[in-house]
Length: 452
Image (cartoon, rainbow, N blue to C red; front, side, top):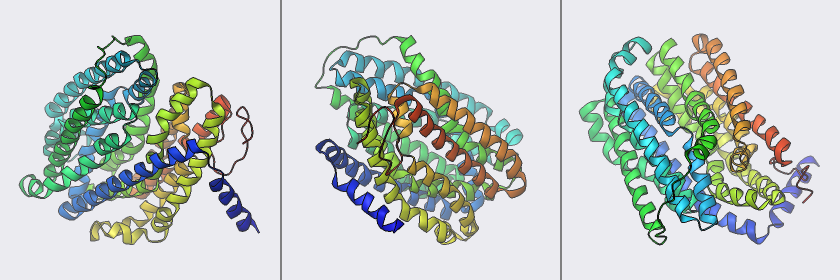
């Protein structure tokens, strides 16, 4: 009876779809397709890295990638969602001077910081390798990947800017497809030449090509709007991106990479390689949510400006349901066939099935709670996200320091999954408090938005 009632509720939800939701579903379908292609290419790239380098070489690659990724997050100073928010708002109001102004200010600031950080990594690579990770072999990979701080930062901000113009296809090509495709094309000869560092060079080339294509997409999109750039107020930009920077440091630097750092310190490079590969695979559970967020972010920004909280509540719950249903097969496969999935990377990785299963639980909860982070960001509630992020990182660090030294990759997975769950749950609570929106699937009411 319970299952029949659940199925009936889902059927009723799917049958009661208005024109606006159908339009967004069409956009989400394209996003799913492009995200699916990108996720498949990224998964294939990780498999190729594992096959070419083995668990130990893969650990060196992922450790160097963690340094570059954290550097890129620092260089972007929280501008990812800020540039999306203000570009989307300017485009919605036909204020193309604002669009150009915020774009130039954001990318110029990030590029300067990224170049400085890349130079520091290049200069201090031997010190980082010896004193932080205790592995001199890491220095070559760090040096070869240092420029990736700039290329990755530009690729990300260009993709977010295109998303703000509602050029979803172009945005996803830049952020999710061109990078792994380019890296796959060049990785084999580069690994033959440079070893683990060659995989790092493929990352720099892939993100660099994506950034250049993104710039071309932006230039074409803005060619039809020749309005000169309006200087964007720096204090307004900083007021928005400052709390988002803290959130970005937590969600895109500390949460995904701190366990890998601790593994590099307490355990072997092979353990780091297994955890890094499992993390990449587990993200397949939540890639549907990332695709939906790509479509919903500019829409939520417009709905917030119009005060249509009821529409946000309706859309968030429906898309949370779609995301959960779509992600379930991946989750079940990772839970019951994790060893086989990890074995695709090579025999050294087959023992990582338990690590993958733990990480998959955290990603499923993330999918189940729906686009709550987007609701808060597009509604100007960056401080709530900052609070949730700080609680999550405290949870991660406490668990990681307790579990990683004794449980290695499994301990890192428990810490990472728990922190992800804390982030999702707190964001859900904050959305309820600020907007009265319940984003969980099949929940029929909301405090401020009214019943559907």
